[in-house]
Length: 294
Image (cartoon, rainbow, N blue to C red; front, top):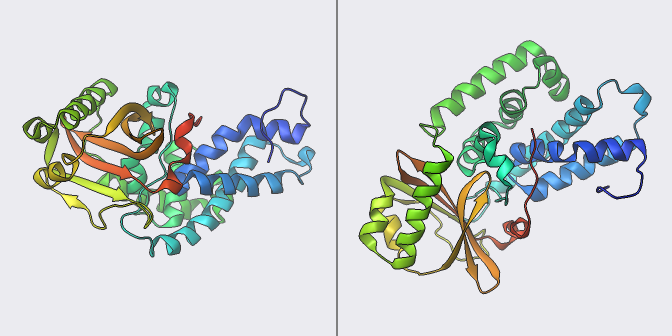
């Protein structure tokens, strides 16, 4: 699959490279996995490279359609694979640039909390929701991508919106408030002050840890501020504050290697959700920012 290069590219490659960040974002939001999104892009490129470009009226729409079809196929396969996953499954975290956080809608759509909500949708509902609500794709275009009628797509979109609205975070949180709460949580963990740590947690806080059967992790959700604090307060890790999936998060280090990515969901001034990704297979994207685009 081509990457951007200084020499002149052929038209097919040039178009694919120009839309690559968009296509990756589409696939990632549908799958919650950067590795699987890259595989989908590989399949999309293989099909795009054989197309007669003179027959394609809207190249962006065509590429999004092919990416969607490949993502839907993979999403159905992943659903079966995740049923046998060891412990909680969490999305693969991405180190993101400030421009992602600045786009509030994009940041919300790729947040760990929202990706987990999208996991509760049926594959076709997730694909339709992402295309319509995040990328503002028209119903006719979505219908062509998923082999449904526009009327059927409208019904699926309505069902998906209702499902997501009932499960998404209750209120929007500003970037400033999120940074302040995450920083307070980081200080409390670093100093080991249990009272300060409890003050940063919502009473019904939930901690999910994803070790994938490789790294040590709790196999069930840890519920309640006291229980979460008892787990988090045991260690004094080396932590740095980073932008992960559009929001402030903590990267925990073991020597020079990333040990854990801890994303936090803030609600009403406190940490309500903690998502600790420890599976080393999901930490490979933390060395460099991943560009995302709508």
